[in-house]
Every structure is written in structure tokens, then in C-alpha cells.
Length: 291
Image 1 (cartoon, helix red, strand yellow):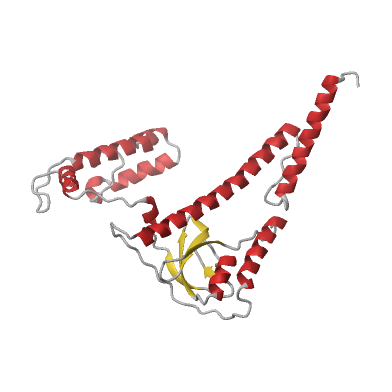
Image 2 (cartoon, helix red, strand yellow; image 1 turned 90 degrees about the vertical axis):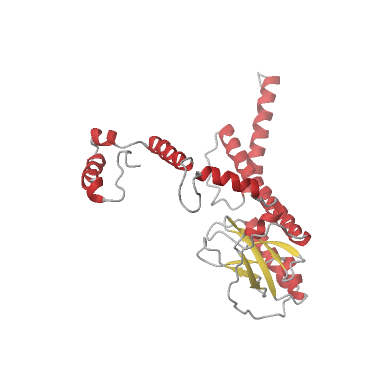
């Protein structure tokens, strides 16, 4: 890599780091000659790829490789021991976010790293578990989709999917408030007399086994189905937003801020009605242009 312009590698005296820093300072000030001295991101990527490729095929005389190149050693090892890939319903075993949690009258409380405040998960199914005496559960969740989790008992034999009770601070619609209230009532209906909450340490494990039993794969299938259903619901919301925007453009209506709109479904129906009324007037004028 020493031949690549801008390299300031291992020895500052030999690599003339001070001179390179001066060029960098000139380039930051917009000096065209200094800017042209350094490779672009595409050129740098191509040169790094070439350096790595040369190293990969360069025979090594150390104790581990003993005269062969890293690429040859890698390919030979793959022939003896191919890489294993987990099936889709088994990939959840790699998740480090499988935590044993308490099930209380509040539901299951988890604070994902990407949220400032803890999230509460509860619905009618968690209430039934609470009524049946289940106090400890295992929660599986994805950091990129923490609003939906899968819960199982400690034996990992029964599974339920639960959404977080999340509401916008200032712009919650009537439908959102109703959905959260329904989930909370469903959880408390089966265990109104049970109170108390015990905090426990987080347990997080990771498993890299190549083979798993039927119960493990069944959990994966259940979890994937719950995630797919959640994504379909999110897609329905996105479809509604696209239809609203299209109708607003067609009717010449000003685009409203849907984040602050309390009843987006009712608003969609109203602009659908406006479109039908306009089409009706246009059709009448075509039939009776003198009207």
C-alpha cells in the first residue's frame, strides 16, 4: 500500500507524514492540485481491492500456511468442512436478544437499546398466561423491529406474538388510542387481582449449533409468521398514505400532515367522496353540456 498516494502508514519519518498532512490541509482549503493528488473513493476502493487480492494469492511461508496462499488454504478447508447455513426458521437461535423476563399486571417490560424509555408489551394472550400462573417468560425481539416481540414459556413449548403499547406523544389518533386501550384491557381482564412486579437480571445467550430439534424450528416458524403479519399491517398503512397523496394531487387538495391527522381513515373516505362527486359532475356535463 505504500505506493498509493496519501499512505501515511507505519513509520512517520520514512513515510513523510508531515508532507501528507500539508497536502491534506491544502485539499481541505480547495486547492485543485492537492485534491487531484489523492485518489477518489472509487479509485481508493479499486486499489484496496487489488492489494487484498494480491495478498490473497501470495504464497505464505509461515507455520500455518507453509508455502500456500491464503486463498488456496481457504478453498482446501471448505472442501473438507463446508460452511453451514441455518434455515430461515432456525435463524432466531443466533439472536443475542433472547431475554428471560417477568410477566406482571403491566405485561412484559423491556427497554431495547434504541429506545430511551422502556416498552410495555401486553394483550389478551399475556393476560391468559398471567391468569394461568405464568410469571417468567422468554422474550425474543429484533433490534430493528422492537415494536413486535415473540414470547414463550421457559420450556419453549408455547408461543405468542405481542405488540408494544406505543402511542405518539401529541398526535395519537382515535384508532390508535382504541387499539392500545383494547390490548391493555385484554391483558388485565384475566388478572385484575394480581399485583406486583419483580425485577430480574437480563440473561442473553447465543447458540451456534448446526442442528436443532422440531420445537426450535416451530418457534422460528411462529415468530417469522408474526413478523410477516406485522409487516403486512405496516404495508397497509403505507398503501393508505400513498392513496391519500394521489387523491390530493388529483383533486388539487393541499397535502396534509398525516402525522398530526387524528383520523387518517376518515380523511381518506372524505377525499374519496369528493373524487366521486367530481366524476359525477363531469359525467353529467358530458351528457348535458348545455346544463
